[in-house]
Image 1 (cartoon, helix red, strand yellow):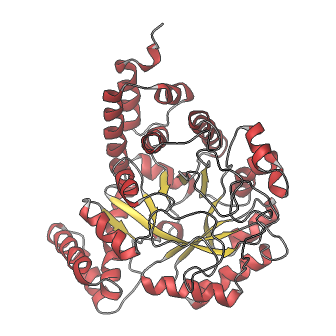
Image 2: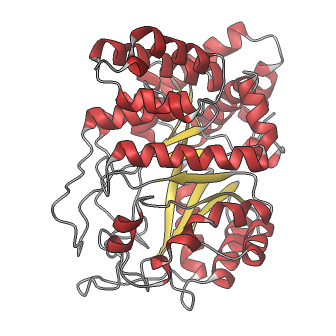
Image 3: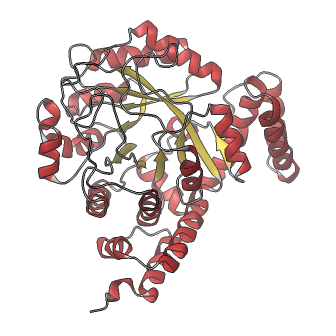
Length: 435
């Protein structure tokens, strides 16, 4: 019997709804998940790109993760940090070491960092994280810190929020309970329900921007994508907003991993479909691609709806200052921040080191409404240009600097809102100019 849910007319109605900035329902998401017509998928990919540009314009946000600790009490079978990895070289940064790494990254041009720590309440608990956050803000030029940490209570999340964290990020890893229980045999992370409720507790504690995702490859990706979007829709219904970002981490080799045979392997083509479905299902959301993926694939995903990308990343503590110790997973894209900026420009997109929304109150439900009204891209474009001018003055060199100058000259030529004066002020030494 023919699946009428995936007939061309039905799929095109769904695409039109996304272009109208509407969140898709689960029946519509299911239709995209079941689609196997390659010609229609070409239309889906094209629409995902158009939706991304309607929301964010051509800007691509850049950031780097800063790993604080790989000492962990969990035994997640797929992770290099697992307590059962007896060959792991363990390291928890001192507060001063965390500041040193953040300062180094700031000098390379980064203005936002994602703090990542394994789960060890004694060595890398909340008091430690808050102290790191306070010291980085006080002693470096980093403007916003996000955090990927273990789930917390509402009270602890309030303390984390009060320290100045922008986005709180935590992945369910897999929504399939039997797989979850198998992959997380011991440690606090073995509690499926505690992890499932993490976003409710974070939001109730005051976080308006949260980041979600699943580790693609642990279970059937279609089931996982549907479950994650259902979770997002529940948050929207309850709080008026869902995740600020969705990440698309794909299972990769790791030292000491017990997952050697990936039965639910996600192909490159599957990953492209996942990015497109996330973009269409939740038009306003930021879609994040990590350096787990190869450079050529990450470049392709930027043209299919992804809007944020890490660059020059290290996935071990002390990885930027030295070689680091045991990594969480293998890195696929080893390009520097400058190389990635140059490539983004070459793709006809606009790199952005902006941090303004978190500090100007454009978050949560307010951000969602601005995005759905296609207004957030006006902030994104100008702030991206201002951050590129700052990067060009302080860090860029050679061909990349010439590419950025060409972009800035073009923006000045068509601007009528005083952009030239703002760029001039950056030339004269002013920093953190934003709207």
